[in-house]
Image 1: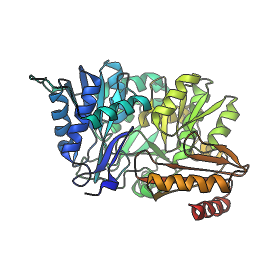
Image 2: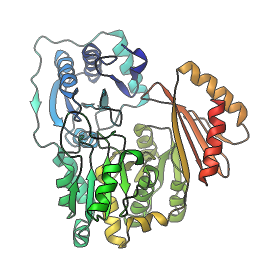
Image 3: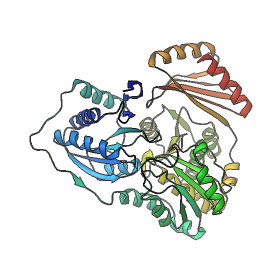
Image 4: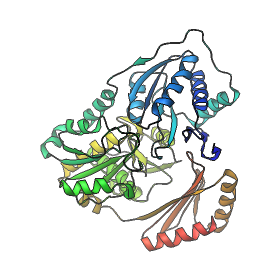
Length: 445
């Protein structure tokens, strides 16, 4: 067992199946969550990883042993599970997905009543229950119930949010790549309901994923080729749990996940009205430019969907997200949602009459480099001390790791919530400067 690959944190539990992530751990964590919920009904859904059934059965055993009623929603995107939990007034939910991690990984993501992830203090309370091991017990467990069309709740909310009739008049041609993940059973019909002509690549539900599930440019070769082959207007890529979205323009060129969020925020501000914008500290400066062009305020939060969601509620923001392609529209639900993002972008394309490349060209260019370094918490403390000493002349934000801003570049270094690594991001106005500053920072690390 490689314990270093096991991550038990306020984000849930994540590891490599058969090594660090075992049925015993899954059972215990499910018992802890069910005990923490204290009764009622918990929805359970998964992505399409080969380990999903094993993990799900361990989860059901934990839930049932603690007297909570499980509702099996089958394969379902995580934003759909969050929205279902809220709309059906459930007591909680568990998503079995390791998101963008490779197929050998799996994880439990925990959702509280109202359809949001646990707040940090709630998650710490749950971890106390987990480590103490004193779980709620019943002699007569509940039965597993099943819902056969759980995606409809999410789909209808999105379809009501956008101008579907306008989109239909433009007959937009789309290629979509859900990576054989949780969106695969739903995304083509969803886009067709918006009136689009749809070609789907990597849509089969197979064991494993046909590409690395993280929707970054280096993993989108199939999508780029298909967009050019079918002369499509736009290409969409999702990760395994469908909370992140990547966009490919009509020339088969990825615009970058940071610009996916920028286009979505710009679309919202142009189509739906002014609103403050909230993004996390790792997000590109292009979002600041988008907010400035629309004359609205922009706020920053710690990395993590729940942190962005809380900040959105605090400042009354209708739109926000994370620079990894995680678009959050509070009119639908303050969660990262690739389906809301796709619908919003299609409405803007239909409204503006512009091509994706033209919309992208209206925004300033920035160049970002991302990297992660295997590291322990002890390594992180040393790294933080060295970086603070060297870069003390910049504008420092220590809300989440260390972000330092200079006029022509910024960087953000922080310990990951989901992996035993330190994440490093550097962005500058030129690619040469980004590489130069990145090299200097990595030398310090």
